[in-house]
Each structure stands twice: as C-alpha cells, then as structure tokens.
Length: 334
Length: 191
Image (tube, rainbow over all chains, first blue to last red; front, side, top):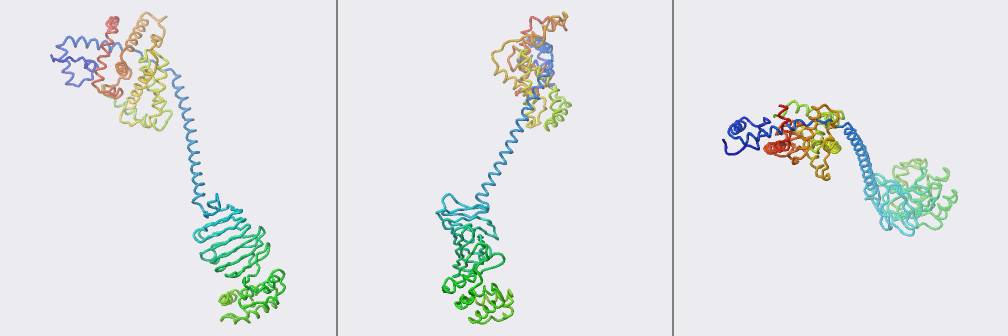
C-alpha cells in the first residue's frame, strides 16, 4: 500500500478520468486501503445522487426576453450608428467650412478690425476705416474709407473683384490680364501697373494710372491708360477717352465736350501737344465719321511720321495691327 | 472522458454562422444549450426559477454579444459554460441572503403515484444537498452532471487545473454522501 491516500483522486477514478498508470496505482492502493475504499463508496454514492437531478426545460419566456433585448440593442446600435454618422458628417462639414474659412480661396485683409480675410462672394465694407487686401502673391489693393468691394475670384489665372463704390489703390506686379476690377461702368484690366480707381454706385468715377498700363473696357471699347494719364468713367456709357493729367485745361475741356457729345473736335486738336497723341490715337477709332478721322490723323502726323510698315490707308481703315504699331511708336513720347 | 470530436465540428459550424450574426444559428445555439444552462443555474440557486431564468438570459445575451470575439481555441460549449459559471458566481455575489425555495422548481408532489412521489422527494433532498455545497464544488458537480464535460474541459470552464477539478469533485461527492446518509437506503434499494 502506498503511504499516501488517494482521496483527491477518487472522483477521477470513478469517472474514468485517470490515465492508465494512474489508474493502476489507484487500484493497487484501493486493494490495500480500506479507508480509501470507503471513501470511494461515498464518492460513488455522491455521483449517483447527483444523477437524480432532473434536466429542467428552460421556460420559453427566456428566449422572448433575449429576443426583445437583442431588438432593443439593435435599435440602440442603429441609433448610435446614425448619431455617429451624423456626427461624422458634422465634423466633415465643419472641416470643410473651416478649410474654406482658412485654406479655401481667399484674400488676406489687414487694417480692418474683425476682418481677417475675404472669400469668393463675400463683400467687404470699409466704413470709416480702410483696409489692405493682399491679392495672392501678385500685389495688394488698398481699399479707402467708405468703399465696398466684393471678391469674385481668387485663382491662379484670375484675381477679380468688384468695386461697388468708393476708391481703391492697386499695385500689381503680375503678367498682364491677371487682375480685374469691375465697376458699374466697365472693367479695369491690369497690364502690370499701379493705379487709383474710384466710382460711385452707378459707376461714375475715374481711373488714374501711376505706373505701367491699365486697360479700361466696356462693350468692346477699350481705353488704354498709361502712367500719368487718367480716364473718366460714366454710368451706362463706354469708357471716356484717356488723357494725360498734365494736359492743358483747354485740351481737357475740349475732350470732355467730345466725349459727351462728339463736339469740340477742332478745339481739341488745336490744344493737343505731342504727348496728347495718346488721346488722338484713341480718337481715330472714336471719330464720328471719316472726315473727322482724317482730321485727327492729319493732326497726329504733325507730331511725327508714321512708323515704317504702317500705311495711311491701313490707319484710316482702322486696321488693328497698323494702329497697334503706331501706338507703340507713339508711346515712346508718352 | 475525452472531448467528443463530433461536437467540436458541430460547434465550429455553428460558431461560423453565429459570428455572421445568423439569427437562426444563434437560435440553434440557444436551443442546443438552453436547458443545460438553465438546469445548472436552477440547481445552483437551489431551485430559484426566477434567478435561473435571469442567469440563463444573461448568459446567452453575453454569448450573442461577444461571440465575435471568441478566439476559437476552445469549443463553443466550454466557452459558454465558462460564462455560465461566471454569471452564476456574479449573481450569487449580488443576491441577498438566500431564502430557500426548496421544492418549488420540481413541481408539486401531491397527486403523484407513491414511487414518483418518493423520487420527487429524493430529487428535492439531493437538490438541497447540492445547494449546500461550497460554490466551487457545486459548480463542478453540476457541470459534470448536466454537460458531461471532461475534466480537461471543466478545468477550462472553471479556470483551474485538472487536479483541482478532481479534488473538488471528490470532496463534493463525499459531502453529498454525508448529507444524504439518511436516504442512503433508497440508492441501495435502487441498485
């Protein structure tokens, strides 16, 4: 007989859970140990006793409760998911909104309390203040007091704003035809320049160029305004004829008359200086008839000959290439 | 007792469907195990049917909720009975001092033939004796009886060693034999 009793192994022995060697040792011990045999009888009685416990069928109500709980969880899960999706969409929308606010097309604004940037479609009113608007990387626009502007586009090939009223000073260092300012009377197109532009709500105002060139256009008519020259703008009318700011008063008065009703051409031609060929060049295409055009042409020739390759006929028939070449030649004197 | 390989196969097939959220498969899983889970809980709580129902519901809700995380390195039934053990222990810790509801779960004895009445009475005495066992012994006895788990599977379900399972069962059965000494004759007569 082994010295140690096998009380703790008796259930395993009775249940057939011992390995071959363990079982053989247990049987050897039981053959010698009456105490363990008595305990084995007790264990077997216990096993038999438990055998009378009936398997009881689970009430049907349990599955109904489980089913109801599952349905409730599914509804809650659906609601939670729906809320999560809604929250996600909200986050995305907020992100887009924030992106549009900060990273979307916009111009930075300085000098106007509470306004840091202006985005496409937005208006900016300076009131009694003034603001500097940085136009991407190509320049800046100073918006004077009591002015109202709106950003229309801010992209690589086009920077465009509306001047509803007031005055702006623009300084642009970009290739021609990238920066546009629309007013009620036309569109100022930067050709690489610095200029002032003012207008009232109807578009009555002026364009004064300080450096470079600006093209002011409406309904197919273009006024090319170089540095030192200005051009009046009038509501509902094609652009006035540009003239140098240092032109004589007589010349300016005559030009105003011409732009208003086609009169005073003779006085205008008479008061013109060499430099005023800027104005006369524009009048070639604005003359009321061939006779007036010939008078303008003749006056212009009095200040210098036609450049080589440009004929009298081409100019009088308003050939675009001929007019361009003559303007470029004249521009040396402007 | 070695694990039944056929049961393992069945569990795997059922598990795959349950993991897909197949309601029919979940229903089958419930149908296959519900009576044993309920009976274990019922006898663990000395015939308290309400508590047994509550435990059964909790066990299957847990199973259905967590089956996606089941690692599959054990048979589903072992995992399920481990949950049964845990829920029974949790419920036991939460409940108020026990009020015996002896006899209620096994039905009324009145009107039964003499032999059946005797069997009923014996079952109630055994249920009372089992309910009086310490919890770890009680769970070992009930798992072995209702689920016929091997000692190895029981060790997994009870989170202990095989040796501990053997020891608990040996002690439990001796305690039962002691408690049922007055009716020992009935078992001997039966033999």
